[in-house]
Length: 411
View 1 (tube, rainbow, N blue to C red):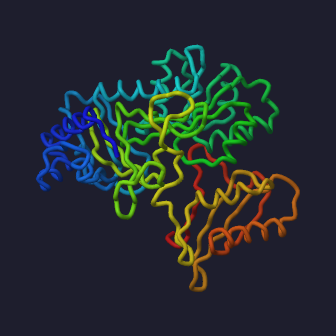
View 2 (view 1 turned 30 degrees about the vertical axis):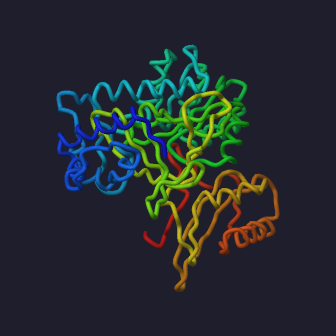
View 3 (view 1 turned 45 degrees about the vertical axis):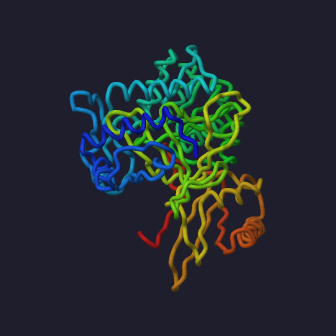
């Protein structure tokens, strides 16, 4: 791993702030007798921080700057356990806005764009982040928020929206609705900024071709500012991240040892200049790899690969470890299928069973198609799921994130 002298200096500055604030991480450092990192070797000895640490700090135990400097809080969108409250100083908000503006510029946006923002507002970071970056760019923001598809489409047409900001699930729903209504010629969209959930190539191709727009995968998480800390470029060959604000590592999720560039592992992020709630070596549980070399787009900013999944997405079926991304990889090989699928795992008669529901794009022999998909799974992954073919549109669509894995063993 390579960490510059400037980045080390920034890390040490944040460490001193954490120790002074006596935060959970400052206490960890004190207990370990660590007061800073003088080299890359020292840096990788720094303890990790985890989501459970952040939950334990509820409500304002993460606050590292003096309260008079805190101008806003946000909260993670998780639905289990205590929420994570992240305090922001004025500088944190400004830094985040600058990063978001960079994302828009990377996607080729300009001040004449009209930005149709569908992610939620409130405690969640998404809507307000998309809007702040758009306003700093000088573009026209249309702050729709989620839901009410009828109104979304009306405003999209009447306002001449050129940029769609949404989750991939809602972009799919809008694309299908636009196609069904035959109103593509009334839509002026030219680009889509898509984030909040992992999405596969098949969904990307469908949304892009149906709407006739170029799509960009934006990355972020509430604990680390929010969306906008990275985005892919016109090359669609990885997500550029802003290494003057953030330091990225990829570690083996089991041994927690650093992995060389190009190897798949868990993304770990350190905030270099964050004031309100700085995080050192935060385990995201997102699976990716650091891409070596320069991007063909010419940007000097480094890249990670698209998010492949999460370490906690792993399903264990009949002794075999399976990730949703592996299932997507197999399903996309069948042109007869749409991008949508749903996995249900049950425990019946003393054994685990996986059912995979998939949508067909036309009139096909369901039984024969199911047999071919099942055989591909058996040869590729090593177990035999029950594959159920349904007509297109049967599986649920979402205005937020689509729940694709339902593990009935624990419900």
